[in-house]
Amino acid sequence: MTSKISLEKLLEAGAHFGHQARRWNPKMSSYLYGVEEGIHIFDLPKTKIALEEALEVLTKASAEGKVILLLGTKKQVKDKIIEVGKETGCPYVSERWLGGTLSNFEQIKRTIDKLADMKVKMAAGDYAKFTKKERLLIERDIARMDRFLGGITQLEKLPDILFIVDTHKEKGAVREATKAKIGTVGIVDTNADPTLIDYPIPMNDDASKALDYVMDLVKDAIIAGQKKIKPVKEAK
Image 1 (cartoon, rainbow, N blue to C red):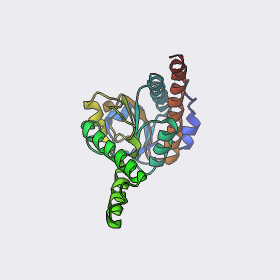
Image 2 (image 1 turned 90 degrees about the vertical axis):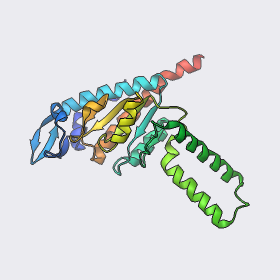
Image 3 (image 1 turned 120 degrees about the horizontal axis):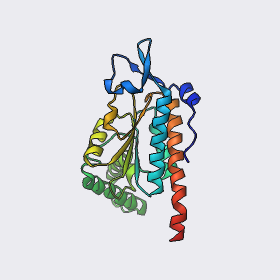
Image 4 (image 1 turned 45 degrees about the horizontal axis):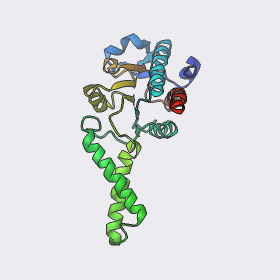
């Protein structure tokens, strides 16, 4: 069971506000209620239905032990993506989507392995023989790689599902997922193309409160699935 979705909370959080009416994708028309003061307004009951479906997909995938990769790099959600990733154990990208993360995963995996090796060597004091300046450069290199790849260090293979906040902003990731036949669940605002996403969630992708609320639901959905899988593991 996923958490009960509150239309009142979605409304209070501003989930119903889209972009300016002139900045829209006509393919979003079926999810819209109308226009107020030049701003598109989402039909929240439809958002609720789409969100329920998306959460069920995440719970089912989690229960089946599938890998869910969380993606959200905009300032309104990046901290929340890290929080949900850590609490659920899901890999996440919160900084910038590196082109090739899915389409050239073997190369990305080599870089991840290199980062892990450098961290081990740093902790073991293997870099002590280097000069202070050289050590500083190595530390900066580790910090830079960790910033972009730290959330996906446990990713051993391509994910089964990509969850995306702001599918318009992350269109490169959407393209890679589609090409790799990876399932997509994503928050789509009025300027996005919902037909590119398997399970679109039509809502405001800029409101911090709305994103926090939905990401908490996503976290609960994934954890609910994980709880279903535990007895199977114990039985083995």
